[in-house]
Length: 432
Ligand code: FE2
Image (cartoon, helix red, strand yellow):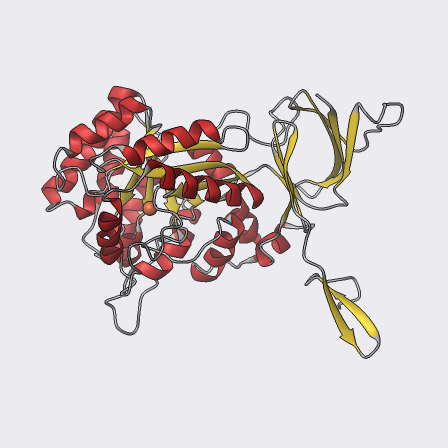
């Protein structure tokens, strides 16, 4: 395998380094590495030009079984989560494995082109035909050249509200799903909701799997399942293995109660996965005005030291009609929506799509360091600030030492009389 030398890489620390890759691993990272003396057929040289390089992005929350299905069989006219669930139930009837695989694979390719090669998707385990789970398990194998896909067995119609929910969830795990999911709030009653979580944790222990639950994804300030998740995590000794996705009800909790819950989430070493696109749209729709933001308490969780990740969640499906699989776009939206625009907070947004989800997903050898698998992205900007501001393009995506995606940035030319101005939205030293 040809060596790869990447010159002039701006690391997240701000340092400028050259990076040598051989046999799929980072061999050397140094101020200067010279390819002189090596035959051209032995070493490919890429000049990063001082641009920012990061480990690949990790999109920690997707629904690749439903993706690209917007409008099929009908559009969500109310924009609510409940209408989205109804539409998905209609779509599931007679859905073919080939269609699910095609849509999922296309979005995975979008994600990779945007710099994400580590993806976690939920898959509906309450589909009675089993086709949905089978489709994603096959896709996981088929995309290994470009991405690592982690699959959460997710009971979309709930474990006790659907028939045979327990059995179907366990079957999905036996088929090979990587993570156990749940949906306690949408069970018929709180008792069912707590039993939902108890079963999820039982399955995690029985099959030695990570946990990722759609938890408190509502506006109801009495939806308090994340508290129970923290309790189960601590009591069962599962610290570092459990994620709660959404937790939007937390936005509406009494402040005293929220402080207690956040403290226990930290003690349990749990991850909170926030999904800016869906959560900005689905929650608190009945508020009238003033309308609460319907988002979990990102700033307070950050202050408490909780591990937070950003997910795309829905990409062109019954719950959210937009999206293009860009974690940086999610970071940009979260900056605005959760008020994370303090200058020192911007690197935290990059953490939420790199290091934090890598920890949640238990990715081995993650990061740009000598000896690790050579996975990295070269962005079309020289700072984290501009990466978020411009939702920067991923010029190169490198996986195990191989370039798997290249992007040629758009070229914009503005005419001022006879004078041509190149426009790239970047600030220059002349801008004072
Ligand atoms: Fe979700």
